[in-house]
Image (cartoon, rainbow, N blue to C red):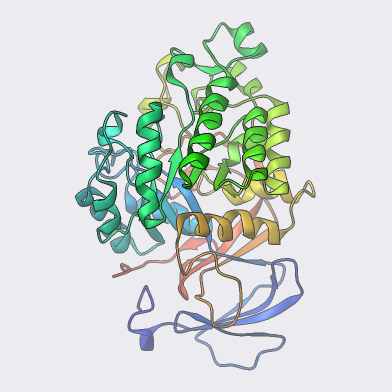
Length: 444
């Protein structure tokens, strides 16, 4: 069986019956040769596999702008294979792999390596993100043009994990990527304001005696960068927005007509800094969990479109980096396999978004920001069959032992969450079926 639409004469065809396409009525979907061939009621077509999708919602394949796959260098935490398997189980058909690997993805050679590993995995498309600066050190621009011209075709650049805090370097990066319609994705963190910080600066940090991470450390960088982006006429994307103040700055920039986009993580839509009272390092993340007021502001901003996308910031760590004292624990959480469930709980079940809005924030807009043709497309006849069948009525307890990711640092262990991915299709071939991974070959 072909995994990518090549050799389509051997591909399996599917008839998905009684599926709810976004917020519409139940219809049948015929998939063959990598494409959506027909949509209608009571379709009378031949197919190799017949799926009764009654009660399931059909979404376009999800696109993650912010995934840490760790390979090369930290295969003890994740590999491209296990990370893309986790992505498929979460309903993602494309992920952007961040550059903070070992070695750093700051050359054409490294981004091509990551891209080829994604081709070999076969579970979702992997689009490497190139580093903005050499070694993520913030001192000298990396080979932005060479990474774009490589086989990986890099369009998104980020030093994520670190902030490009030098205004001159940031300006040069924004100017450089204009030549090929690239985007700089900024990790907004003023380093001098967060030295020794362990959690959100506020009432809880004061009571616990932990070093505080002030909201202004994020907001100051965003304010600077939206002004820089406007000045040079370039594209800026703000990673993992976490404060109400950041939302207001981004809203202002958009009202000015500037080319600024932003993402929010599922955990910043649900969790607050009150959880740090447990001193459980699973809740240690960058940027930190904020207050309830911040969470509500982020949900509202995602609903009204001020925040464009949900991005997981999937950050796997081996047990020894998390099962330790808070002060020395690594920052980050896994999130690919729970993202859609968290969005259902925080945005759909609360009435803030309908499924059409979820498709916009988790597929259409991320694909547009990352310039991924073939992804983020409507569920329509003739379009690539990148699809997710999701069961919103399901409710279950999160058990990380069932995860495909190599790491287990989830903040949702033991929590009841709604929804479950029933099937994921990448260009007409199932990567997940009935909630289980399908054995696959590579994409090449």
